[in-house]
Image 1 (tube, helix red, strand yellow):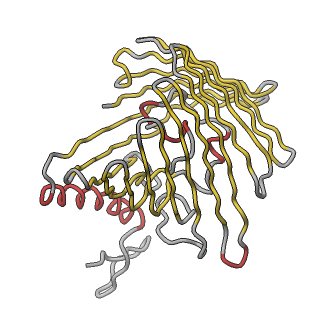
Image 2 (cartoon, rainbow, N blue to C red):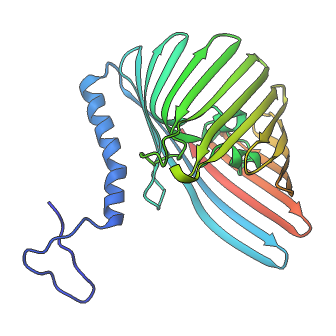
Image 3 (cartoon, helix red, strand yellow):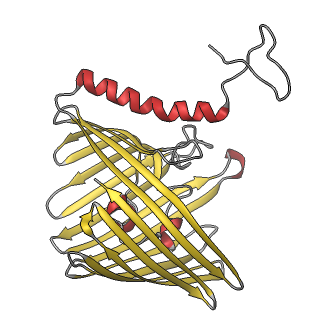
Length: 323
């Protein structure tokens, strides 16, 4: 059933019908996956639905040359549902219910597991580095690194198939995706993009490499998109993590970050240096901060000061409530 089409300044005409308003249709589409997920869970699952949530509220002050801006914002409101249908099948729905643009879906996939293998079908996060693999409540910094925004053509989350192999000392992941990012169900070309990661790890050490190779654009104007990454993490009370990214396409260049976090129970000072160079353009920034955790990641206050160059800097504070 369609809703009447009311034009500004006119009354509805008999027999005239139109489409559902865009904003209402977007809201309906964001609710449908949740209802379907909960309904199917009640019918077929052996165990209950596990729910996780994370809300970020932010204040930001930005100074660029002689201009400045001060603003409060509700950055994200994540809500996740995970259902273990049995020991082999899991379903995952992860949404940003605070997304005002009407595209809230982050994860929408089914997972088939038989140790040491796992296969995911749907929309998922690709294995593209240490930073990208952290769930939102575990992120140390308020903003992603400079190279974090360059890892995939549109978004690290995409629609496709992901195969994972895990054992005690290593992890291998390989994905085949559309390359159009999250919430885009139709590919814009016939090419399918590939991404992958190989990690060697111990209790306090990770060494890994990752890649992304694909083509972007319409079928008659395809362009290469190629990324190669190296990751290193040493987990001690003073935790060090660093990633290098090489850009081999229209954005020819390279970049890296080096992050230090001193792990304490309630207070965690941190520092990160970012550098990115591509097509003779250079970007760099220094982030100084502190995380205050009265209730671990369940309640976290983040304070970040980001200095970029000359008189360009930002001060951000973010309150996290998660469970």
